[in-house]
Image (cartoon, rainbow, N blue to C red):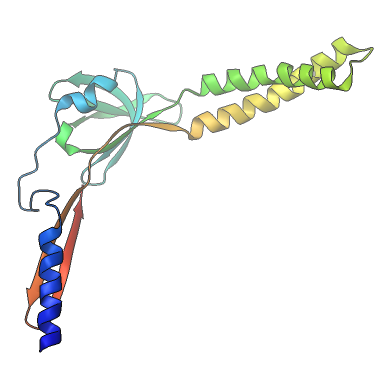
Length: 185
């Protein structure tokens, strides 16, 4: 029995020293203030919104207000289809904004002439500098544009991610001693 009492005393001490992290899981969910992410969105933004229930909507922001925002789904061509899906600030887990592919294409396209000129300069020049510069710029610029478009299409800027709530509590039952940890979004 002395070993069980010592274990109970250690668990009680451990739980007492834990800082209180959040309210218990039964507390009502309070939506975040709208300024957390509504001021970072504009009408027309291409976004991916994940709701609290796990629903994902990929589309464009079509309306903004102090009580939330609306998103219409976009098809593969970018055309808006279907009805607007409304979102309240408390019902959103994550908002991601798609990056513009045009910027990646332009940066990649401009890398072609820069790389070609640098290579020719390091190689000591050539008699047919203009022809090599033109061909190198076209080939390397095209490859750079493809790489830039691919990278930008894969990138998403996180506009909002809901904070996690963690609850920690002691579990002391006949025959069982432990700590319960609950993580919620």
